[in-house]
Image (cartoon, rainbow, N blue to C red):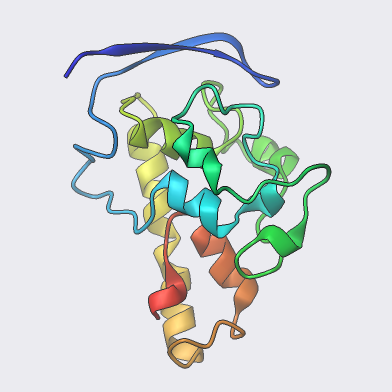
Length: 168
């Protein structure tokens, strides 16, 4: 695979550069098996439609063709489960969960990882992804299969971490 250099210029990063060393969507860490690609997540509806609207040049155009993106402020109705889930970026920053190379958080890291970037922060981010599995057990225990009205906020949060609870 040819290494591809990427230069980022968006509202949160200017002049950040990285190299994609792996093919798109391939050669993931053995401990990292997300159910959904970033493209699928954007199509289903995440983060009220406001995530990465200014980053379209960094990623393949087809990721955004069917993405549910808000025109203005975040819109919970654009999310697959119809509600907002998760904490604000300021909370993530205060807790030290944000790496400076990925100032938007986990989904930005995942989008870049999926695109082929490998980074020293990968192990930590994969561990954070794995920690979300505890929510799968709660949905499995409390909800009947296919009941999307059961624990929708928790389901939306899991969707934003590339877990697909639609099959549960």
